[in-house]
Image (cartoon, rainbow, N blue to C red; front, side, top):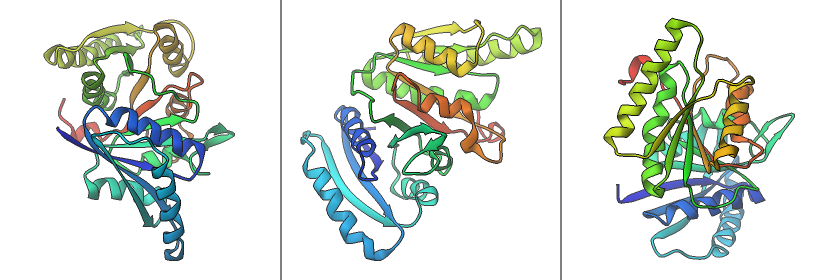
Length: 268
């Protein structure tokens, strides 16, 4: 694809600036339009919000193949980010998170609730996230088929940056589950071999939660990006600690996350 459209929700705070900065960082590698979006709840607020966005855009150093556009929508961030992304055929939503203090917050609300509103991938950054080159992408895979849905997206980003992919997983002790995991890994390995991507497949068998092991491994190898599929049966997905811990990781690594579709409707 020679042209990309990225959406950057902006709440007029430093994390919105961080998201826009990272969008520029990755957008410069292809011809890209970046829509900087603010959502208001009343038409009377549109003009003021548009003016604020224009000021923010005017302070960004121009890049030859990246265009910026200020867009204000009336609605709810929980319901409309996904709709906007679908209508505009956006490839990626880059957003900032204020981190977790008590409960996960984004624009004063729950980041996971926004992420689950769309099937478009999100790239989540924190205020402290740096715009360094992406040389190593850490991709966690679990026993579910849904977790495999991040593989192609991670591969696309690896191609963009010339990055290595480190696929990490937990090796079950149960024989049947172990074979199931090996099957999952084989699918990803073939995918990446066919694409001639540089990969490592690493079992994380030490004690601790999977999310903590992923973060520790990322620090150990100098990972620059974590990429995962989000899938849960919980009624309140914003309380899912696995995804929340990764998108607000203490290393401040950017995190690409997709809201996985049901495996029954996806071919692997």
